Image (cartoon, rainbow, N blue to C red; front, side, top):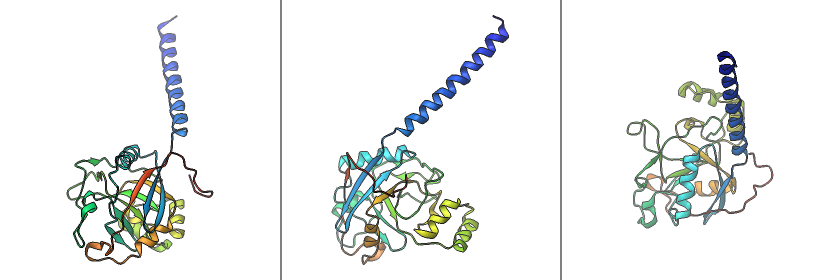
Length: 238
């Protein structure tokens, strides 16, 4: 066999096995397990689906839930028509009126911004420190928020696009105009899951009376568990 033929054969085999490996990888991802976490509160229970497209955040969240890190922590920052935030480790033993929000686990999670994962109502996203001290937009290891947001008109979305230099897909624009969300946070905070059951609980918690620093006057505690078996309600988008 000539050198040219051997070279051609090697190149062909390289492309063949590369394509085969990509096909197998895609098939593996399709069969990847989806994880669901139940969040219990005195206002009702929610079930969140964790996205496999954000594996670092998914795996970290599962670890913390299974370790009991979130047991009896508070939703310590609640802003109606915006979001409910929790996960500060210091909130477990916090006294009434104590300022919260600075607690952490001693490490951060690298940002995982994925096109198509955005701040619609019910989105689960990671809190983080501001850009001035965190230009990489790395996420808090433990603090998170659930989006409530508001409904946005086409005109308001266009204003966000111009101001933030963002461009929303037709699907995102329709979602923000119907179920609502916080589009101005897209691309700045990692979205790594969504509520698939009990989304009305976000509205109930968002309406509680709050004091200084948007902390609820009456504590809103959480309990979490990874669900071993769960089937999403009919009509839930994958």
